[in-house]
Amino acid sequence: MITTIAGTGTAGYNGDGGAATAANIANPCGVNLDSSANVYISNLVYNVIRKVTVSTGIISTVAGTGSTSGGYNGDNMQATAATLNYPFDVVLDSYGNLYIADRNNHRIRKVTVSTGVITTVVGTGTASSTGDGSAVTSASIKGPCYSRFDSSGNYYITECGAYGSNDGSLIRKGVTVSTDIPTISPSFKPSLPPTQPPSFSPSYGSGYITTSVGTGTISSTGDGGAASSATVNYPHGVAFDSGSNILYISELFGYYVRKVDMSTGIITKYAGTGTSCSGVACTGLNGAATSAKINPTGLCLQSNGDLIISGYNAYRVLKVSSNIITSIAGTGTATVSGDNGPATSATMKEPFSCQVDSSGNVYVADRGGNNIRKITSSTGIITTYAGSATGSSGSTGDSGAATSALLNTPYSIAIDASNNLFIADYSNNKIRKVAASTGIISTVVGTGTASYSGDSGPATSAAIQRPKGVLPDGAGGYYISDSCAIRYVSSTGVITTITGGSSCGITDNVIAASGRVNLPSELAYDSSGNLYVADFSNCRVRKVVGIVTIPTATPR
Image (cartoon, rainbow, N blue to C red):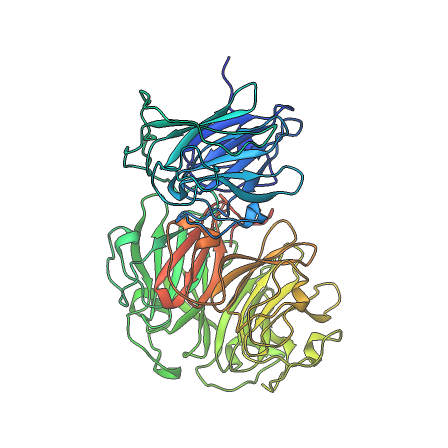
């Protein structure tokens, strides 16, 4: 009977620390066992050696960094920090040390079991078959692809040439491990098996980042066709309906809301005319959404499927129901007023983001008003929920009532399953949280310094720079759109980077840790646990596959 012990059938590199059968691997080329029957796998495409512990079924990486580009960055370091280049095979000696046929580095690398340190034991890095009779570290080998020990500890190496070249065709006999005799025996030409592994087309499994919508071109074209071939004009807001059937996207400088039918991949316009407007000049209310002038930013959905749009330069909060657009807050005047009265009579300066809680109440981040407003669903009354009711900015008030605190350009908000409110406090370089049970505000991420630092440590000690999005998951953690990165804060308060880093850019169709983003804004997830990123300055909507733990509430 044959069974699977590692991999899902999807090409990728993820799953360390979890069940090997739930992890993705790509082009496993060599496999071997130690004396405890733990399984070691050479993962060719991602340049790593992985281990499946037999007693637990857990997979881990024991050598390599997961870079698809490969390379050589030296020896005498922890093997997990070392770069490999097409590790074609892996074997173990009688002491449990690993020997890696590092093919395109033209070396045999050894990982000492007791320390985890990697060294070169055969080869100089030069692609040639020279040095017979000399010390193994002075000899050159050409593209080692397979190797084995005999019962006496002699080590045999098959040279196949650099990957794809087939210009090797030697077997050489190397060091006797038990006595460490540094000799290379004379070589001979064998009949070699094929050295090309099967090719594959990656399907971008869990942990990959790829583009879902947009090409990077700054325009709003492609309606009626594939979303992946369409262009989007600085996407800011993203939101899913309750079944993850429709993805809504707001274009900050396209002046549209567009929708993608996820079953077909077709994109169409949903609201807006593509014309910029300001205040009362944003016309078309109470008519067809596609005939209204809007300046959309944040998006959120009510439980009945109606779409709420933050119209930042219209100074209103809008709603689309049955394709008719109406105003549910704001008058078109850019001031801050109207608390404790009807939301439709209140004024706002720059409503930039919205969220709906479990009772249907709508929360609005007024970027220009430096506050968070709440519209009570049962009455339509608006109140200030956090920040200054008069629009004052600042960074004070932690550990006190949110209504006494000061915010500075709140860019985005999100609500978790317990109705706690998270605020991307943009100009304060912090994420702040308002506890639903007490109304108390606190800083949960950031020191106030605009920088990128602190991974693997407490989020409150980390530095973030102008956060534009926040999204809670179902595991008690939340995702953050940092300036050039998507970061994650776990339920224990530890921050890590999912994709991107200290510099912005575009790197796509790679494992997320190797990806790059450019001023990402709002975030959403679908019912399959995929994370969607409005990658603002790359003019794309990006997708990180299968990383989100889904809450019991509907997708965001």
